[in-house]
Image (cartoon, rainbow, N blue to C red):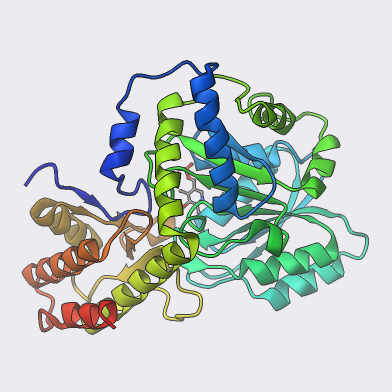
Length: 383
Ligand SMILES: *Cc1c(COP(=O)(O)O)cnc(C)c1O
């Protein structure tokens, strides 16, 4: 079986054919009026996706570039940062902050758990001299499949007065993330997750409060400089040569997203993750995140059955069914596998994936009644 690969990893995610075709055209000049029109529309639609009135900058980088763009425009050496860590990507914020010379304090929880708002509230209350300048957090932690209650956490950060810096790489375009209404100061995302285009673009929006702190940043990044990007957005332009074809693809993808509607997109992700979780349980497998209330609707982390290895499950799924699922990261490598239901995913994809997973597990000797997961899935999808 060739050329039918279904990427069920949490990025890159499947790309719609219309988006691929949009990208396949000759590049146009990035200073042309034609490209300006594309950018004008794209900037506007990105604001819609971020649910913000703030400008959204487009960087030519992966998501981590936007993370660096966030902190390298805010921090001076010695600044105090509080990093809320529930997995690999939360840890990355702390590492980037440290690379800017910041003094990094953390709240860290067991993998599979979310940040407890009470713990954050207590930590912020203890900072009576308001030394904490920035709090970093992850909306949807891709490494564990846990979603933080960003709305509540950001409310607490705003009460304290620090600038909130939120990783929305696998939440924007998959779950409710209201930048302005929730008072998020800096929100970043990347192209190869919920936005349904290949890797290579990253996005960042910053509030007025964040810009005030930016003004005090003595050595901001040159390439990622917020002020330069802000000026360019006004002119429907970019400071340097952007990834023209990817932006044309983004324009197309955002139009598709608008056609579906944000609420509908979120409902689809929620429905898919819920159905997948029901199917996994029905197959006699354990979910890594048992608590439905913090389980991600973009990524589902699953424990392999007793005696069957994660690499074997991944191998059979790939070889026999052309479906790619992700391994765990770092200390969770070979302990869990992760199925993404993020971006351009429809019911049929999920039916194919669950059926294939059942077949793979049967081949590997898992004792269960084939069809049990499928029955649960179909029950949920047709409810
Ligand atoms: C993918 C991802 C990133 C960015 O990773 P890149 O490989 O740099 O694109 C950041 N945060 C989360 C939560 C992610 O899933």
